[in-house]
Image 1 (cartoon, rainbow, N blue to C red):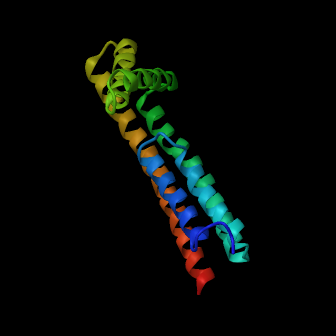
Image 2 (cartoon, rainbow, N blue to C red; image 1 turned 180 degrees about the horizontal axis):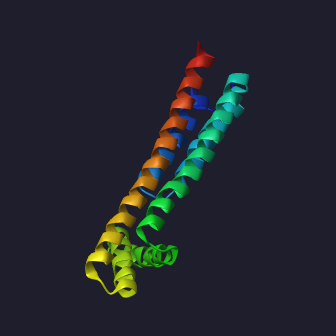
Length: 166
């Protein structure tokens, strides 16, 4: 008889995976890392070859998600003329906005940051607004890629649990 309640070897990792997915949607926690950690925790408790194969798949999905998350949106922004320095300044304003206007301040600060920096760079309101839209779409694409990777990791966990229980 262990210290953990019955089923904890599945439910605790599952909760960790759910918290990780929530961390992707609301970027406060390192979402993908938590989802992989949930699969690893389950594999440690289960110890089967299937469980460790699921860890390998989860790590591969993590690496693919992380790579795509930075490559695809970055290319899109560069093609539209949005500089990396613009994004860094916009992130700084997002942090400030988060503390000034709780809940929505980070989004407002990020968009306003891109718009102001691009307006200063180009001196053309239409071009600045166009680049701002492209940058926001790229950030949403990045979040979508991360969410897809997290959901695939969660599906790998579920498939592994079903396979080891069958």
